[in-house]
Figure: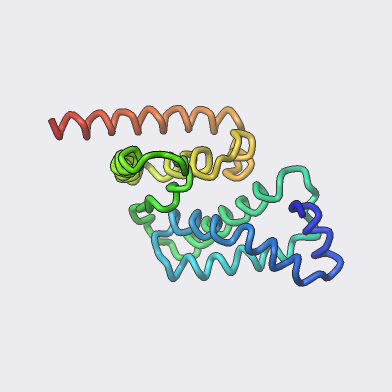
Length: 185
């Protein structure tokens, strides 16, 4: 069943459809929130808020965007509200390599896998040093695989703004990676 079919079932009272939709998105939403908060405890609480808001607002979902885009936008708003309420300084984000491990091929050799992981660790450490809006756009575009339009919807920005931020984020990442390589030589 696709997301829209599950939503129709949920709106008619099907409890199993709610469970299926939850299982489909819980891990990805958890990873996204954890990257934003760097706190396991806070992430669990915020995750509950996201799914509570999703359930409460599901009847308002119009299907103008994908459900995935819609729920990630809810998650982003929950994180923004969290920081507003807590008035916390945003801590440095540490992206775990397991978050993006699934992007590699399953048929690669052990050597290629090890090299890819070493390289990925360096990239993740470097991304961690970028400003938060760069981290967010890189996560949504390249880890979650959202389109530019979907990323713009989630971030509440124009497509042009996302493209510009993405370009600056990639340049900043590239510059930092070059500095890291130069300092190790």
